[in-house]
Length: 79
Image (cartoon, rainbow, N blue to C red; front, side):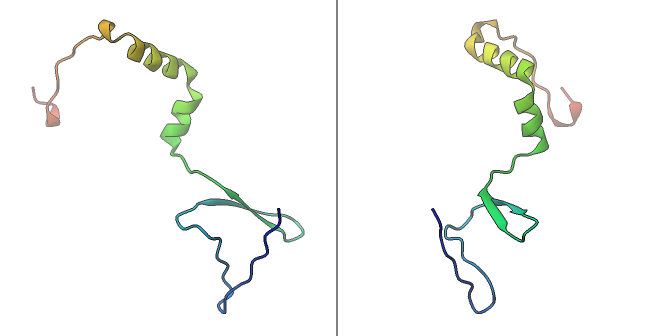
């Protein structure tokens, strides 16, 4: 599918939907490729790549009866 877009008087293009994030790639011939993208934090990326941690969390959710209660700490390290 090909879509033709025209710039406004200030040289801008409207991509339609608002609040959309795109990964932009410029080819050597000047072609610009926009791909819809989702940005994740480094913490999320590390979690998604840690299958052992994911398995531990999945197990804990499936077996709440094995949960170990721990005393809650107050802010500032006071008990």
